[in-house]
Image (cartoon, rainbow over all chains, first blue to last red; front, top):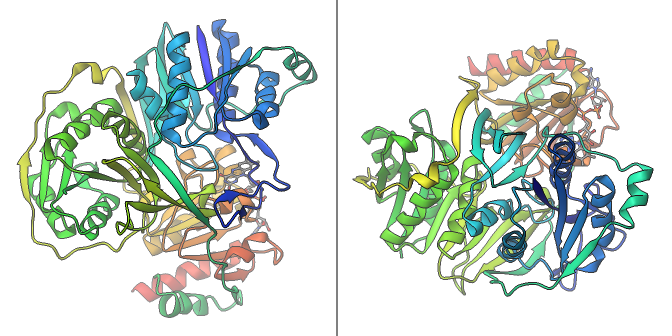
Length: 245
Length: 319
Ligand SMILES: Cc1cc2nc3c(=O)[nH]c(=O)nc-3n(C[C@H](O)[C@H](O)[C@H](O)COP(=O)(O)OP(=O)(O)OC[C@H]3O[C@@H](n4cnc5c(N)ncnc54)[C@H](O)[C@@H]3O)c2cc1C
């Protein structure tokens, strides 16, 4: 059983978002980067399945060498080896094509990743990889079990959940509560240093979108505080000023 | 060039978000606007999409499509793109539409933009504005391919409701059984609730409510407002509330007209899921709670005291 876990290298969820170069580039000054929280869930579930199914886990990242510490963290958490495809992540399709190229070589049974990245929030890569490999893609997956090469999943839908079964191979976009985030222990951190991190050159890929400019939302106006003994005033403001009720 | 819109239903009723997607396509000023519905619907329900701006509705009525099987939906929608010669496909964001859109974009060799929040600028190429960094920023992106797929966020366009009724045409392409490898074995769904991502008003509770037994406070206020109920992450982690109510960075992102947060501190990860709400009201007993900095209106007070009074005041306004 071979599991591929695709990880993003993204600003920590508490980062202040700012742009530079005439709002065409993300300003990473002072920003700490982490494994995307959704990818972290996917990785955590893969580590559990590894023990259960005697599986091997490859962590894959598409991007530059600045992500190597993030990839090492995935190795410390429990991936056995890692691959970095050395090309800037131009757009979702480009990333998906790189992932599909690696997957075609290696025949993974299960390709896991987060339901979306928390920088560009595309939420597209799992579906694209599924279409490129012509295998099922399911997202957002909040429970995943493997029984006799069948994946039994729970998918979140509006107002509830859906139970889905499909035989492997499969691409799944993961979210909580699929597993609890795992914190690497000392042994994991030590062994991660010697686990293989292979750097591959990219395959030729399409770029179907071009990022033109970034923009920050307008600042919020000052808050209006209403006295706790005067809820009628709040109702009045919501009705006659904000006009939302 | 025609614009295709995937419309989604809930128990045979077209969702409000899909009606918005049709309005979005109509506002693009390209014609005709063709809606595509998959599975069982009444003729009247589909013809009514004309009000939202559809010129025509294609209905793929095969019962196999009653369930939202991602691969099968992607194939049928790709075929609809080919057979209508449409250049753009619009989908309202949803759990199903997000998963389907990505596959369609590959199958038609098109450009995809997700999380779109405004009408496209078609004056020079085709540019759209999308929400990124979980609502903390926006990106202007140019779609380079000849065909495009857009997934649109709630409240991106004014709902149109004055169009004439639309013609409904049968569209029954041959289904590929390979596309039904994934089988949906069961669905668990709350009934009679306002769906969180669809809701125009959301009332959310946090750890400040102390326990699930106090959720009647949230539910009664929500009922008075016709609102959906949400919660913070620890509340769903502790299973006080179901996971599909969890709002924020790692949960549902909402963009209602009104978001009311009760007993929620306003951690940056929670704000990430609500920052595109039009109006935010915060009720918290701690005047220093960070949520007050992100809100339009606030009450510093104890939820157990303030919320019942607020519910009563709303009820008396409505009666
Ligand atoms: C990677 C990551 C992702 C995360 N994603 C999310 C996410 O998606 N969504 C999310 O919500 N959180 C998320 N979190 C957690 C987040 O950081 C906060 O811990 C969480 O939002 C706090 O929930 P809370 O406000 O309900 O609880 P608390 O922070 O405990 O706040 C409770 C609030 O209730 C108030 N209160 C107490 N009693 C009363 C009373 N009687 N009346 C009125 N007010 C009262 C208190 O003053 C306090 O402000 C994430 C964290 C991380 C690290």
